[in-house]
Image 1 (spheres, protein in one colour):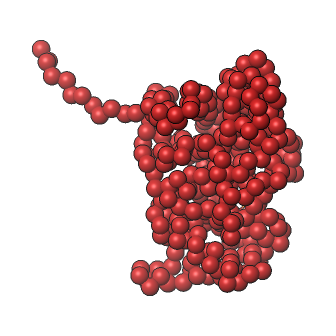
Image 2 (cartoon, protein in one colour; image 1 turned 180 degrees about the horizontal axis):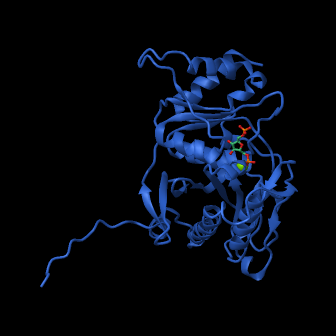
Length: 343
Ligand code: AHM
Ligand code: MG
């Protein structure tokens, strides 16, 4: 008879981790934990749809444009609906703003009357990559409302600077699906096991190196770039005296995937302003603020080339900003070039 058992190492699930870390919020009564669990659930559903994207008739354009005049993909619409419905069906938030919708949505039912939080979301970032089977992601950002609890949510609840975020994160639907998030106590990453249907802690306390070796930028836009960015790119392409190699260029064109790689390996992601996009392409509220919160929590830096991203006071929901994000020394070097070569 066998009388010995080999006890396997305990794997922490995302659910367990959220509950265990609830104590980091002395004022919280569990609503934020419940909200993160709702995002986890919606993420699983979107993951399920994306995994079968090549089989079902859900690839391609929906035929509509979003508020910024960009073609919406069918999966953009599906991910947007899934996140909004899942969060609406639970009582943790009083409203949501999405990159895919013109305006924010109020949640006004009895269920939401005690809600303290609002969510801002890019439900499917990099969606132009789906048809070619490249990683895409979901980006989310959570704030405490500033309007009175029990009243209707207001625009000001959504237009808060990034340093007011209480949590932010992303799901990357890649080779494996991961959920990476912060509540201001470091950054933790969880990998999805589809067989079990759970996320497990796989990347505890993620940090980004101070010096990275990867630069990520759409160099096809070179002619439109500010002089300082052009000079920075040329600097990246020079031989590094320490290694006798230039830096490595990597650009997927899917912010979540580019960010995730640079977080793990060290690097900088840049989407500058250009003559075609005077304010850059990326949205302050749905993309830049949550990524800035994550990178700062991991020890890195995010700015618009001059100002800390999380100190910018948003003026409107779909505001765009230039974005420089990643390893601290790389972002500072790029900022130095912008200062030396204004214009
Ligand atoms: P999206 O939110 O419409 O998908 O656009 C954002 C995406 C980012 O994921 C990516 O980094 C960037 O746009 C790529 O833009 P470009 O093709 O101009 O390089
Ligand atoms: Mg996006």
